[in-house]
Image 1 (cartoon, rainbow, N blue to C red):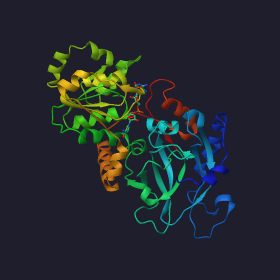
Image 2: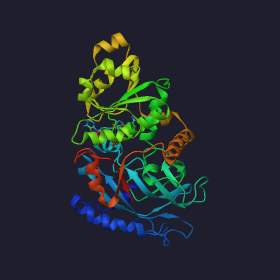
Image 3: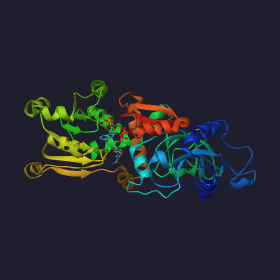
Image 4: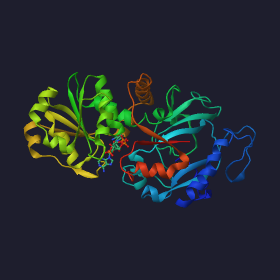
Length: 388
Ligand SMILES: NC(=O)c1ccc[n+]([C@@H]2O[C@H](COP(=O)([O-])OP(=O)(O)OC[C@H]3O[C@@H](n4cnc5c(N)ncnc54)[C@H](OP(=O)(O)O)[C@@H]3O)[C@@H](O)[C@H]2O)c1
């Protein structure tokens, strides 16, 4: 964990009511010079004139596992002297993903050691380097190469291998979100079945960032998608948005249950070869209904927190396959270079206008508002991206 625990102990822990006030104070971090001219270190120690210091950071920290809106606090961390080989990164933007919520709740398989800074994804700019740094320089944009950095903070000091360089001619909200959801969509389309033009993929949770990417990446391969969404007031607007991404089929679960399956399959030309499930419960069963002989259902999330229910018949008579996907495993089995190639490919699509998804940028100062939205307290919301 990058953060010195001693620094955290020194940090002021804040009541929820105090968050706004402190964030206003934290906002003055933006006025800290990127590399402190005065070498003030932890506990007021003074470094030699050759040392490089990462400025004090404002961070969203949790000291125990639990409901994120109860356990997260905005704290100010001490300035940190960089070790040789480390860089200081000033964060530009970072999303709040469902897995970030799960990690803090303690329901994610990887239990973080607390205290910890929230957030796994994001983009930042290098503001200081040490002499041993080989591949990064000041002003480079970087994204984390592994998920343990704790990105919900204004500054991070970490070795250069913790970062992957990305180009700058891209909106920050895309650079900040490319490394998890678009990668997941791409891997699931590439790694399970050999999809050919005209094939059909069916998915639930189609409004998610992964779902939006699936539609567009499939479309680029001339693969059709059938997209299932939750019913809600204004569902037609949601459907229009997904249709505009390049699919012809967006249905609620209820609409699917009432569908004349025979004529729908005739319209599609075939049953689905591949299905994606990030919801569970009856929404997973709905995906399975459209899978054909030997069809594969890939589960990658469990937003409803309900187990998958599958009918017996399709297993026996259709040899249906149930698989799972976790990007963390993919990353552990591939090099940083493979990961960089994948993110560069996806960012190129963004630059070319071939990949887009809905985000809502929100100031780090409004962290608690963003968190409430990301937790669905006010109903469905676009991906919340904190801007520092
Ligand atoms: N396995 C992996 O490696 C991997 C990688 C990336 C993401 N994921 C998982 O993929 C899923 C989507 O992530 P994301 O970041 O793309 O999502 P997102 O953009 O944050 O959107 C959240 C999605 O979850 C749906 N949702 C929220 N609460 C729900 C509930 N109670 N029942 C059913 N649906 C609900 C939302 O539907 P509405 O629009 O109807 O609200 C929306 O589609 C998550 O489960 C995430 O953990 C897994």
